[in-house]
Length: 139
View 1 (cartoon, rainbow, N blue to C red):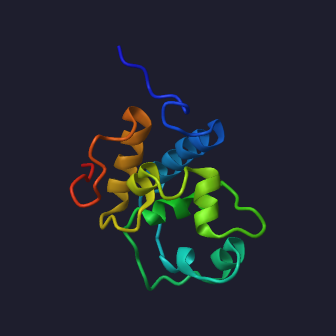
View 2: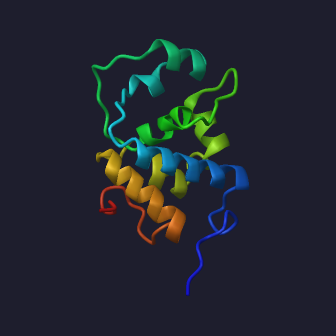
């Protein structure tokens, strides 16, 4: 019987590991939540201010970058002044590595169900051998 990966196996802190599980549970429970990429792209300014002031339902987004943005809805609070990359790095995973790309890259052009499946796969099996964004899509 194979056991599930530990935070150490996934190169995560316990805090990040717990937050990814919290994010997965929230995303699975709210599959129809509306996305707006401008939540995550507005600069300068801190994340909390941008999140509160840039709600515009005109740019629906199906990329996995939005999965990271669901962290706030899931109750994973940002620091008082924090940009999205800093938030993702602090609460989920190191920015710029394979795990970040696999879970949150804006280069994924797929839906929330794909993002959920990718996160669930990562937490169950770790990173796949092939993390190329154009060739490995879960589902």
